[in-house]
Amino acid sequence: MSTLNLTLLTDLYELTMMQGYFESGSSEIVIFDAFYRKNPCDNGYAVAAGLDQVIDYIRNLHFSKEDIAYLDSLGIFHAPFLEYLRDFHFEGDIWAVPEGTVVFPHEPLVKVIAPIMQAQLVETAILNIVNHQSLIATKTARVVQAARGDGIMEFGLRRAQGPDAGVYGARAAMIGGCIGTSNVLTGQMFDVPVKGTHAHSWIMSFPDEYTAFKKYSELYPDACLLLVDTYDTLRSGVPNAIRVFQEMRAEGKKLTGYGIRLDSGDLAYMSKQARRMLDEAGFTDAVISASSDLDEYLIDSLKTQGAAITSWGVGTNMITSKDCPAFGGVYKLSAVLDETTGKFIPKIKLSENSEKITNPGNKKILRIYDRETGKIRADLICLVEEEYDETKDLVIFSPVETWKKTKIKGGSYTIRELLVPVFLNGNCVYTSPSVMKIRDYCSREKDTLWEETRRLANPHEVYVDLSDELFRIKSELLEQMGRQALSL
Image (tube, rainbow, N blue to C red; front, side):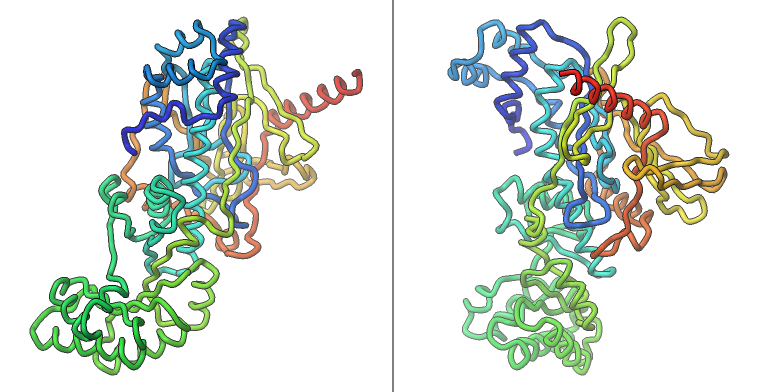
């Protein structure tokens, strides 16, 4: 997966449009924005992820002889265009939000500035990569929030929609806040912790449960987490686990990373009963881990019920984002370079649905923080040339409900620009941090959100506003398009 040539990971119409641009002699420089319109999972935010794989894709972007032969076999591409593809490589600029950043609707997560043929080709793969990993990172952030400080293990490989979804989904889950994954290939590829216990089949393969537990403790004395629900959790599983722990202690073995796992039944009741039994036997520091089709809602409910669980293995519902299986990111043209003036001409897409009307121009995202608390006050989408003085009052307003305005006193806020250069003139200028460093960064990012934004149900909306100048340009384009429609 790490060396696969993904150049043909694209929709056919990207290539047919490229041929159209080629044959019409169009080589204009354009700007495309990749963004999304609605937070997934009814969340108050999303977590950006997938940039490192976008970098790999752009670096390896080329048409092999086999690629060109296949395109030729389709009978719709002309010889001059196919010849052009032989030396194709990306020559433009890409700006992006770093992985692990909390983001909000309509903000450009990736901005591509390139000749139109190049910018068009990369659309599908960028969306495929960013949409998937951002979705899983966001879902994971919700699960982590529900666990209230307990560790979350990613256990979803066998239920993921194929190997890529399993590997890169686990990567995204680590960014979103997991402490480890069961996916060994993800561990190897991205140097993240791999963890696991044993299956029910381990227990069933031995003459009895105690013997299975005993053998496992001999093999893994420093990570002895025993699955106790194969036969009878409270009458067999937990007592046999306690017996093994007592024997380990009697043998002078230091009990570290030990405990039990529950995978069925009433997890609240079972965990509380198991906790009582373990404590009475003197194993007050034994871990109680749980799995069994968990998601953020069930974990939150179990925590509210006082379940004695401190470690959670989450699989299907997280790796697939089962309740919200698509991120919904889009890729839209926002500006075209005027070669005469050297300035970008803003472009806008209209729609009967106001949510689908795009923001025009060459833009950047400014994040406004409360200076005292470090929490996010709002995000401001503005033109790249606009500058703001933190010592001066700042008035921001909703681009939809324009009567909603907020005045932020000068000196009470700080500003951070989110988009960073990734490729300049086709050369990569950005080094991705390790996944574990991205995970730590994401944790700090989530701490900049108010608790009201992080709640699982009906979260408070973080305002994403437009600058006065960007709002003016957008309004003028809408008015202009309206006049043109009336004249038809």
